[in-house]
Length: 147
Ligand code: RB5
Image 1 (cartoon, rainbow, N blue to C red):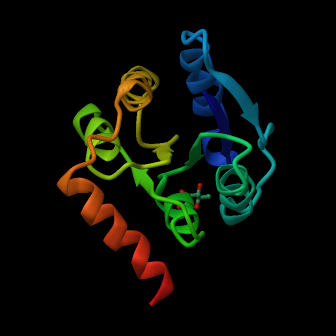
Image 2 (cartoon, rainbow, N blue to C red):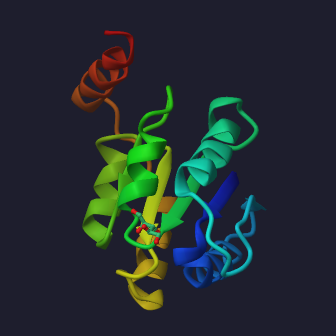
Image 3 (cartoon, rainbow, N blue to C red):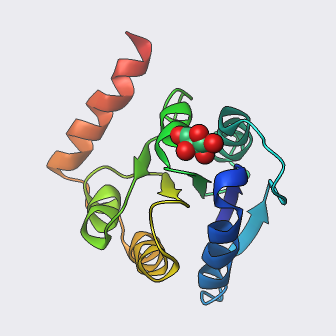
């Protein structure tokens, strides 16, 4: 599985921690689109870079981070084909895959600690969409893009 990851300046440290967690999985390839320092950048630009790789099929899934995770998740969800879930707990991370088929995970670098974030990422990576009635609902979500 290929995962594209990106954060604004508010979550660079958590992005590095998340990359360490992703490296626990032998079959995961990581593409980090930045940012890499403390200089201020705009989270919509990062969301656009990460999500372009999901929509274009370069990567299977994405992880986006900003200070709260809120701004970058809102931006990601404006992009056609993206279902971004902002998660602060393991149960939501698991459900975002099983019920919502989230293809992008958002985390808040100033909100969620390294330990909890690692568990959230592990749950999100290892959970799969269950389909069935949830597929009907996800299809309805995606149809909203064309209304
Ligand atoms: C940047 O200061 C901050 O606004 C951003 O990281 C994020 O928290 C926005 O939702």
